[in-house]
Length: 401
Image (tube, rainbow, N blue to C red; front, side):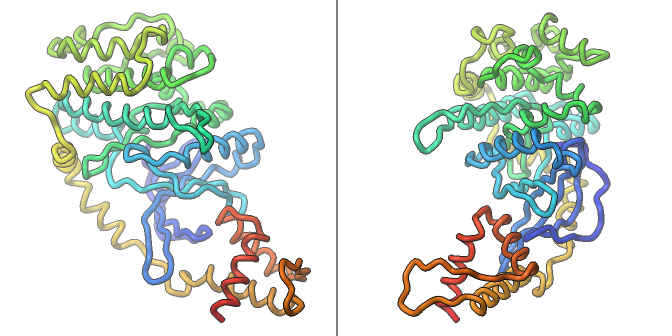
């Protein structure tokens, strides 16, 4: 996720969602804290990732973005941020995803440093183990017919690893990096940071598999444990050369108290020859868990939760207040979509002439531009065809009228 920006105040309707604050903006998308509301007081706090307008006009990017997001939407695992919705409202493509009340690792480590608190090794290993669990699930995911989906994250970086304030670790943005690669020329300021976590095969443009993500996780874990970024340079070319040709020093070179077993895990994950690397995320997780189980202190989610709450104690109340005080949609706004449906159905009912006793008849329904646009908008938001939507709502309306 891009660096947090100053939030916009107020709220804005966005289809069936209410955008509360813009919490981040990058070259590819804007990130909004949002709320989904419904009848009988139902509401859910979510995050909307809305693609920047100039990218929505690039057909090749949109196609790849939608394809990758559809794959990611099939992932349902405790260590992966859940995607709830994918669609287009007006000219804006968007993803609606799970809101995590927590912080990403790009913010957690510097926060600890600023407070003079060394980030505990066991917490870094526990977080990495949870990331492995999420990655393994995604890498092994198959479709309904048992065919591998071949999902590779491609962007395992500190900013895409979230830790919630209840101690749960979540990986976000699966597969989106593949689409983002199509627009690198528009994200010059962001590319350098992303490059530092790429695998050698990714830098060289080779076909990727799950082992690429494990190398990236190795670079992230190396940084957490030593405090040093593994691959740096004055230019993109220099960083690429460092990844593909540079020497990787054992982490004990920078921090002498790193246990040999942990060093062995890191060096295996960082093998430049992927055939010598961990072959699956499960293999890497097994070694991490084995070390933690035999160590003098094995942290639980509660330990991680308490540590995180101590770090961000000064921000917790502010964020809770922002959620509690954000404008709720009025009852009229909640009923907007219901009214759209009712008006569309009434127009259909008034226009349709269905012979008594007919079954499976085809209706010729003359609709005005306003009613047709309302139906099209509802159908797009719910990812169904207009004909299916009309059939369902007419049937239900006739049943309960």
